[in-house]
Image (tube, rainbow, N blue to C red):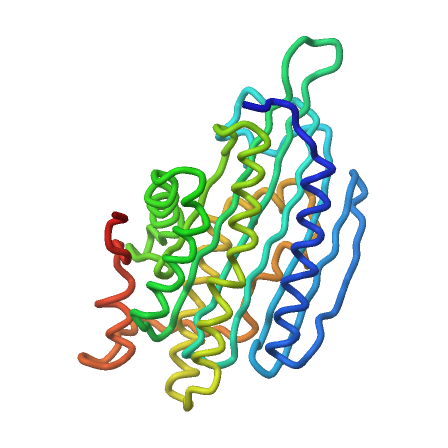
Length: 309
């Protein structure tokens, strides 16, 4: 098992992944992303790429960041108190796509690498880990879409052990859950953090497998649903459900908290927010409606795939 890390290789992979995803989405949407490069006074920077008012995506953000600091913010030391006081380096690609058509789900993906560096003149190793995953948030549920998404996630992880998909799926279900609403944010996917158990080389290979699986998991769903007819009722429900997305990101999301606590660039941290959102007091969908079906059949923790043979 390799213990030597290669942050430069991770940097090259992640910056290339951002470019490949943007190119693929531009081909689907027909409009181009705005590229906004930025620098962080404490060290590092990144490029936030945004497509707004597109033909398929009302808002699509793909951010790459590589930031450095001298002292970890509180959000990062909760899981790793032993890293408190260390200098650190973090890099990652994070994206959220909010489609225009309510029958296309919103999707989130993040892959990242973190190093808390050993103090100088101390014979201790760097503390490092990978994190990330992807999850799907439909407004109108379709079994075939959910099964395709979960199957692609499972297949990406399969070369690294049969236990990873069910473990990462449960982590995703547990993490993307609005406790104050007692409901999942969507239908889940996979999520992992603090991952280094395979050694650097194989852990990095697993991260790359997740990154490469994203377009395979999401684009067939977007292509299948993008021409589905919809009206004001469906757009209204989409805006209402987007409110749950905002609530999660601002109350629970570790990445958002880390970015704000580490004096990150606010515009880039909040690029995940949807452009149009609505809240209503104590609203409930009509019994038997398509909207009610989302709650009764899809916003449940379920095993979407049959057991592997």
